[in-house]
Structures are given as C-alpha cells and as structure tokens.
Image 1 (cartoon, rainbow, N blue to C red):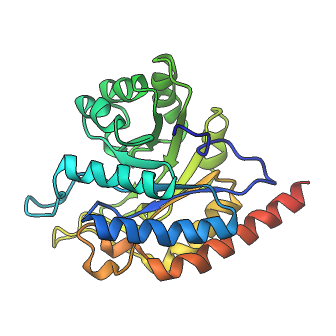
Image 2: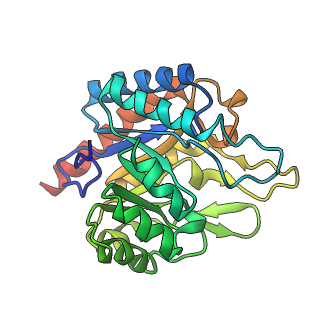
Image 3: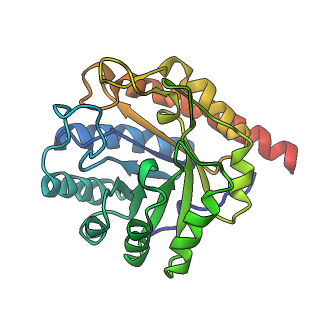
Length: 273
C-alpha cells in the first residue's frame, strides 16, 4: 500500500495528515485512535497515514517506557492498516531494522537525531517504502538537501522531509517557517511536525515537557506557510500516555483543529487560483 498520499500538494488540494500515538501501547488503544481519526479525515477529505512507533529508542531516562515488544507492536500496526485501509508509518532506529519494519508498514520514518546517518537512510531507501526524514534540531533547512539525495541516490524517489523545530537554548525549540519553502524547493513533500515542535526537552526531571496549548497556532502557521502535510501525536488521554504526553493533542480536540486547517488551506487555494 505504497500509495502517493505523501506527495507535493497543489494549493487547491488538501494537506495530508500523519497522526497517531507516540508509541504503540496496545491493540485496543491503537485501533480506537485510528478509527476516530479515519472517521474525521474521511469526512473532511484529508488523506491520512496512521503513525505509531513500535519502539522508542530515544528516551531521557533508562526507566522510561520503550514499548510492548517489537513484533507485537508491528503486528498491531499491520492490523490498523488492514482494518481501516490506511497506510501506516513507524520509526526505525538502525539500518538493520529497515527491512524488518518494512514488512509491516508503508512509510519508514528516520528520527531527527539520525537524519545524517548514511547507513540508515540507504537501508530505508532500499526497502522501496516511502522514507520520511525528520530534520535534525541541529540542521538548517538547506542542509536537508543532502539527506534527501542519499535516499534518491539509493534508487528511491519516495522521500519526504519533516520540520520539527531547531534547538533554542537548552529547553525550547523554534520553528523557522521560511524553511518550509526552502525544503519544498528540493522537490519533495514537506511536513510540519506540530507536536514535537512544541516539546520542551532537557528538563531537570528527565521527562520532556511541552506546550500543547500552542498546537492550533503552530499547525495553522504551518498550513499558511505551505506545508504539504501535518504530523501530530494524539491520545485519548495525554495525561496517561506512556511517551510524549506533555505535548500531545487530546483526541477529542482533533476534529475542530482539522476543520480549521481545512478552512485555511481552502482560503490559500482561493487566493492563489
């Protein structure tokens, strides 16, 4: 199901959405979140990709939750795809995970801290799956050209990049919206990761903080700046999420947000017609 949902979008086309929980906590929660989002995106005409990490390899503390087991979580991702007919996305953390994960999902995502790792980019590219590269918090938009080229030079044209903020001091991230058109000029889809851009990393507690009250502002600005897609993490109850709950969107707030973003996208298309 390597469909062309992740693509460059014309102004008169809707954006696509990548959304789901930070990490797969269990089958029931994954299916519940997926069903809710599928119902909303179908109503609004938004192409949708379900997101869920089968394992979290980058956590602040050694006692942080990392997952329910790789195979079990990957099988849940495949069940989401089979049940709802939507493509699914997950992160990989090393080159030898690429082929394994590609058996279960449609899109392989490269975490921001790994976006310069040639071996993982090449391995992901060679699976033939779409590769979504998160832009490192330490990189300029211009520097992402070379990560994209690594995938293309490995024989895979299905590549996208995701903006997720730049480190600003020790405990905040800043999104430079000028980076969206810069990265679009490389000829690949550009996605704004709304919720991770609102993280507050490096907290003294060892648990990442966030500013979820700014999700609507961040997402609206991303659509206005021309992002092809929106990425966000959501949970029925972020307060009990096992990873990144501090910056997640509560699932019941998603329909109103998406309706707002569709209106902005429509207005942009009308002004550029």
